[in-house]
Length: 199
Ligand SMILES: [Fe+2]
Ligand SMILES: [Fe+2]
Image (spheres, rainbow, N blue to C red):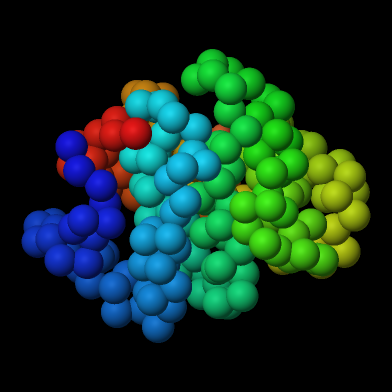
């Protein structure tokens, strides 16, 4: 079991080589690679299920989904911060709707964001662990004004996180929200087979 950062740009990806070529040739790949390398591992929840391996894969899937929708770089950075730190509020590996809100409460200190960017990230983090129907309510709670940006980032985060449900054998692609996301299930299974449940 290895960390993605050790091989993501160099590995022979076999049948997924065209996908990874597309990603590593994307004009914003540098942002994605920096996000992977800059993950503050010391603040992550220590767990085989929700720890470093899961977080790296979520950043990878977030990058790919963002590429598919041509997410602008300023929003890509926010999305990948969400992917990196959405689970830092975990206190166990159980079903827990409130851990996203606890992650959001730590977002300012860990990301250094402020203003609307911080509000968007906090709302997306909180939303990732609650029912899809609560998005409007969560955005109101965090006083988000740029709601279109927030909705897009929040749904990309949920799908990036959701794709790694393959590690639990619990991914039902019908619940994914972005049109291209379901097609990545086999890729997510492959990536999990390479990386596994590392901390
Ligand atoms: Fe989570
Ligand atoms: Fe997660």
